[in-house]
Length: 102
Length: 193
Image (cartoon, rainbow over all chains, first blue to last red; front, side, top):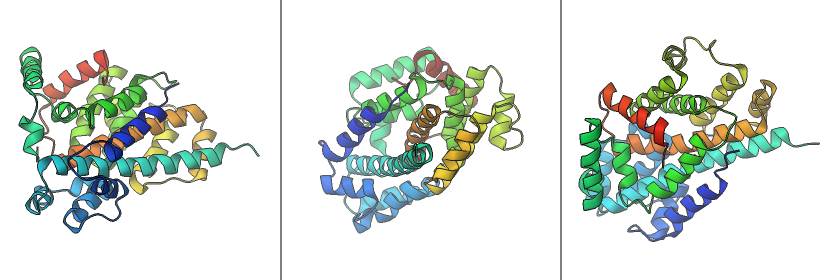
């Protein structure tokens, strides 16, 4: 049966713990959608909660405030994977609760 | 594409690979390919491994069923690029476009079985509300889906809740249907590696 457990751990470790151009704390904050620098706050929250409302201006605002394109790339990737991870873990916990043997 | 690096920041070898794709397929390189090939060690390689396992790993869901789930998650997220990309793959994999189009339009779900229908309902709630309850999961089990099938479906949802977010945030260009047809052929023949 398919199992993404190990692959997902490797992916998350790579983006939030590995080498990058954005700092570790910036990437972790984007992943958690919490404690994000003000200049990135709107962008990260939109990626996590309303991705189809992200605009050119949101990306430009991050760049204007001093983040490079590589840093914005990493921050957006972390925000997307962070939200998908929270969804996956919530659903997995619900599945465990539903199928737990009494 | 809203970041120039994702359009033109690739290595010479990757640019040559893109030129080859354009010549062979006679279609533009899809932005999703440009994304996974940019600094692939950061996102593309580890994410492709996850997506390959979710979409092509062993599962009692068919490839067509999993592509339908991907299109359904995309539809819930209103991600135009991913809807078009994965409904093209699902239609080709099922050998019929009718059921996929009807399902995504919300007009007819009679063509799919109960376990799949209940799984899609759960995935829609998860994608919309970011969580589901144990009762939601019990409903899927009661409809006949096994625990493993639900886990496999959650893996598909994980992948496409990532990819859809990136498609929208980076502003993927949405090409014509021929480009998605070419992409669908490739994904069915070669997978997500």
